[in-house]
Length: 345
Image (cartoon, rainbow, N blue to C red):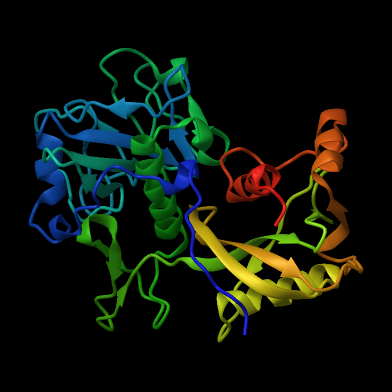
């Protein structure tokens, strides 16, 4: 039986959060409307995996007094979803609209929301009419613009990274699951964005998370196994990874994926830590794994190449540009750096 121990990977930007999710508030009547009426509430804008950013590259938080939904169920009369400053005679905020998501509440009671914006429309604060309008009190958003969480996650602090990860994950889930998987009927949003309900068959549906394993495989010489996927650009290398299959443990998935992609057999498996990866809905389970064989035979389909690297060899390959490591926001990069810093066993 494989040895399984537990550690924590520090420094994973997308895994950190300092804001409680406040699940107890999700069923409260008018929770979204009440939050928007409170000037202390903070609002994050999300669109197709992107975040509204400040010019410095941080998450841009909107003033709830200016970012107020003008939505009825089903949108406005012309079908356009409009988000803008409150006006006389405007439709009331619909707490059941999937435009608004309750991300959590800080210890001082300040609530944190996300506003979901259609990916086909720009965000604007003036000028020509747009289907989506968020009125910002201090000028147009072009000063910051949109940025992918994948690209900016490593630069976010613990507060913003945790909330942004939840917002991007929920946005992707709502976008991909508008209908009941049992009967096909349109579902409605419940629990302030954390579930959907089918009124036809009465079923409830919750955000999906797909477990995947990602592993730093080392041999008896403490060399690290990295792979180059067939779909990747030249020079890009990373640790091996793959989804957990039905009826399979995470440890079994580690051994199967390594063997299928590289022909290398794995014995001991050691759990390291996890990272939410909302692209669109994965939870990456990180492992260190000990190889019991070293001969590499890539499948040529998913994996185009794989190599064993010593620390000096990887350092030289990165310095020369021969190897491009994973981005700093990823658990793959953390696993590589942890191996590089860890003294040989």
